[in-house]
Image (cartoon, rainbow, N blue to C red):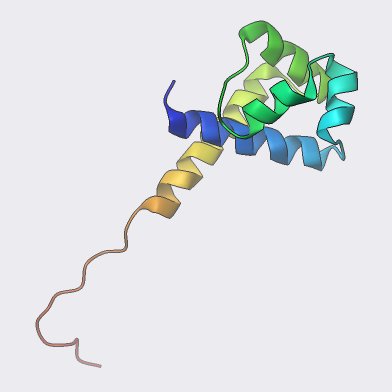
Length: 96
């Protein structure tokens, strides 16, 4: 996977965790996935395995497919934000 998707997944994961009112430590207790691993995912440095994705989804009371859908939505939002504004012509300013 590319780095943009890893970052998008991390932002989506963090948003969902915070929406559930959980700290990384609390998610660690609920999922039995170490908080440093969760931190790596949230920072976009790594992606979870399929087994860990399923465990993570269960701890967050959602599905693995919903986690991936949120990550895809975040990726699309990131792409829209990075898109440069249209160039203006260098000729005369438009009439008002």
